[in-house]
Image (cartoon, rainbow, N blue to C red):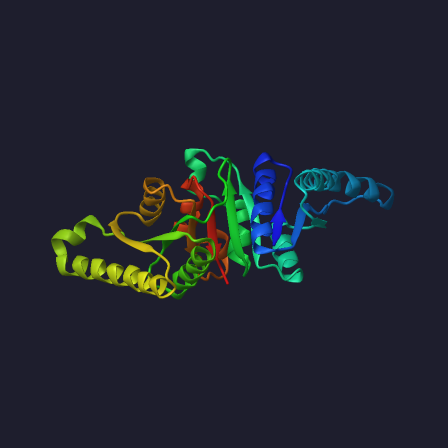
Length: 278
């Protein structure tokens, strides 16, 4: 797995949590920090000093990561990259053949929760690896998992991954599908509303059937409302240890936006969120 750190408390917390996951999964850990590139116009005598100064925070973060790993008895490899952060993280994950990217998530204001943006969103949007985002002070556990489905192949991949983890760790699943129905539909197209609810019920039942085939306990929920509110509300209601989501394929600018539901769930969830890409 690849853990991205930037020296913040949230990224170091995510690093500590990754040790537990690596131990149970018998995984190698590569820890990276990214120094931004310098594109200014300097004479050759100044370039070395500027590059050194710009790498200093990266090297400091990795030195702290190494100290944390030593204290925990964990073996890690540290890599200081230089470039655009999300590009270097995505490329390194590919080069290292990582299955998972682990990142911390800072506490967000109410305004920021609506749009996570920045490095995490771009890593999810541009990469093809699963991404685990861990907010402070949440811990990673797989006992009670919430997986969201909308019937797409992307949510199908998330459901399969959630069942795998539940099977491996003896966890249980809560399977939810949200039906976001405009108010005017109730009066103008009641049959369409019934059909949307029926489809959502079919989606969750299909996942429950998959889980039962693996002898994994799964409870299903179909709820009306904005998807991110339904998902995070149910996670809180049932004390979910983790939320598992699929990330729909995006192109161009939409990769930067990542997908409003996924992004808002990440922003509002109090527990870790696993975004399944592969």
